[in-house]
Amino acid sequence: MGKMKVLQSGLFSSIQDYGRFGNMKYGVPASGVMDRYAARTANLMLRNDANDAVLEITMMGPKLEFTAATKIVISGANLSPKLNTEEIENNEIIEISEGDILSFGRKILGCRTYLAISGGFSTEEVLGSKSWYDGITEHQKLEKGMEIPFTEDAANKIETFAALKFNDDYLRSTVVEVYKGPEFEFLSEEHKSKLETLDFSIDQNNNRMAIQLQEELPNELEPIITGPVVPGTVQLTPSGKLIILMRDCQTTGGYPRVLQLTDKGLRTMAQKLTNEEVRFYLTKPL
Amino acid sequence: MSKELPHISQLGDNAILIQFEKIISEKVLDEVLFYKNLIQQLYVKQKVEVINTYNSILINYFVTIEDVYSDLKAVKEVFQQNNNTKNIDSRVFEIPVCYDLDFGIDLELISKEKDLEVSEIISLHTQPEYRVYFMGFLPGFLYLGGLDKKLQISRKSQPRMKIEKGAVGIGENQTGIYPKVSPGGWQIIGNCPVDFFDKNSEIPTQISAGDYIKFKSVEKEEYEQIKEQVKNGNFQLKKQERNG
Image (cartoon, rainbow over the protein chains, first blue to last red):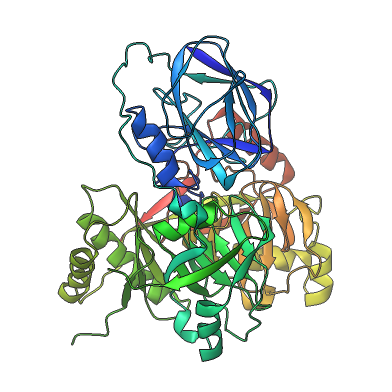
């Protein structure tokens, strides 16, 4: 089994797949990759399963050494990846030799990038998923000195899928596609129109659990009887904070759910940085 | 007579939300659980999880819903074709709690504020059969209904940074057990030695939405014995089946 050694941890990276599905009934957050499109692209180029475990890298990448030959693809945000001393491209199959060192540099576009490896990372699986989450898996984030195992089948797996196109328009887009949430109709006309027309800025409180917005809509909405929430649910607190729930969110909540991000909206939001602006685009379910 | 259909709508690209009457009551829960079972049968061949809260059902898909219209229609038909709800089977679990003052760090305060002897508090808390509405907030945290009105007390004005695993608390009209160490604002009256969530087990918890629990007061010695049994994996919760 090959290992990926962590020489430097970077800001925040974690192993993720499509999440811990089927455990909502126990109150377990689903977790999983914030941007499924990028993770899926990287995996499929390697002919992996779309939900094989990848490394999700946030803003400042780690420095990694591979102990065995393999193939990787990086997709999502552009964090200036480098193999040894050579700059490499996102969305291309990169051949790795034993002892190669992967590092990242300047953040050019987007917030999160995905490192997929031939055969996927083979870290511990808990409740049907390898996604790291505090209290469920042993680790929560990548740390210096860790050794992340991967299956060493790259040599046998010559066939890859280089022709897959990655459309990075959403990384530049400031438009976040949403549906009306279950409590949208209880908003005042003024707030409804503000949600559609205002530019909202990403607050510094943004992580895998939730992204808060800076602009506030103070209101007198009744709290709801605690009910289901899912990634992409936008909650409005009484003091007016808009909280966009992301992949590590709890399974239930008591704040009015005013909007619900579409899949596309969710991946756009997953790539936004503190102080960047977004605008909601209200669309109807198909 | 046909009754009013609950509100059925899409929640994002991966889920369908069904909202019943906006109240917390066992009657609504029984209805929710009855339909949840029927809806689960629609999806046996798909990677879909159906869960409930007090007055909602969520049908959560692993991937984007392919044909929302046809799925919404199928769900609506479940309600149209099954007018007569019947209560589902459930179980009553006996949950040991040690109300020793070492664990029940707010018992004396509640005793003063509510003008109740500590023994009365324990007796009021162990009397009811609490209904498990659903799990949420933390893995293995049970939302329970049925707290005696005499025990209703406001949350701590300043939440504690750390509450012990197993702590049994009261906040407003709710009571519950912290399944792991966490911050929290409830008044703490005891501690339960049982694990409510085992992430390494295929079925991480035995208790399901719709079940009942009854607290049983145990002395510290028995608490320690149970704790040891839990650790060694040979503790069995006492339970009774109850037909719907």
